[in-house]
Length: 131
Image 1 (tube, rainbow, N blue to C red):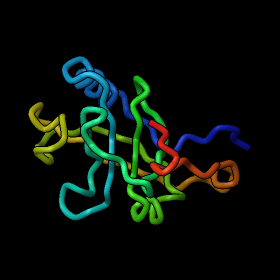
Image 2 (cartoon, rainbow, N blue to C red):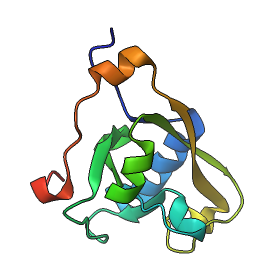
Image 3 (tube, helix red, strand yellow):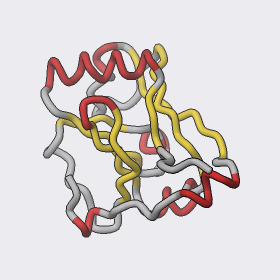
């Protein structure tokens, strides 16, 4: 049985873009709201410029200790899903840091195995102020 199940990871190309954005903007964070249009894509913001809500869920950290947050409503749907952040050519939201680079982050997903589900721990929320 897996001991430490990661809920979110990056592809190599997404990690490369993330490191470039950190080099330009300093520490960053991801948030996925599950809203309509681009709100359903992972958004990358300078850390501290997006206010995490008390019910937002911290799925984990990716490269450079970059937190990945998700709204509670979206997490309710995806709690049994492993997420992989990828980056593809094309413009996403103007609010996400990668947009001027001509790329956008997106989520690729798969269901956790039964063993992974059994090993999952409840993630912290914004109410616990884990930043």
